[in-house]
Length: 143
Image (cartoon, rainbow, N blue to C red; front, top):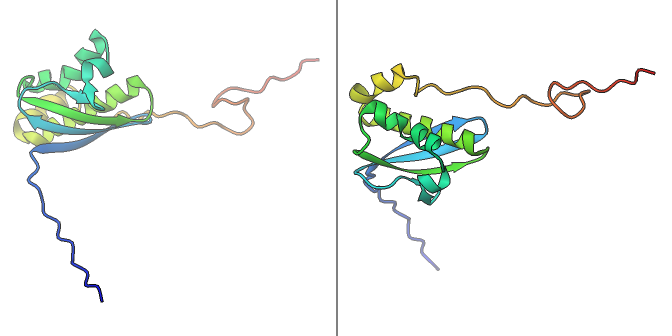
């Protein structure tokens, strides 16, 4: 007879703060670490994943508002939607993680800049009787 050993799970001390950000169809899972290193998005540096100056400004905005630009780094897994929705979801996730890191210090300025507000606008569903789009009307013959 084979005896089954019970599996014991050991809890690792996590050295990060986890948060989730959502926008449209995108979901960003954010891990906030202490220390200054490059930010990683889906295994690549964020400047490669979100190229351009505008994306960099938006990405770093929660850090600048909180005054924690060189104090933290993030690792993000983002999926779904397009690049714009993914960037907005990532920014919300970073802001939430910073607010959890130090609620008394970071939360008020982030809230004042509306970085902790989830944008609830989503794609409108397609209706029956339309020509394939949400608000489009079917073409009617005039003759």
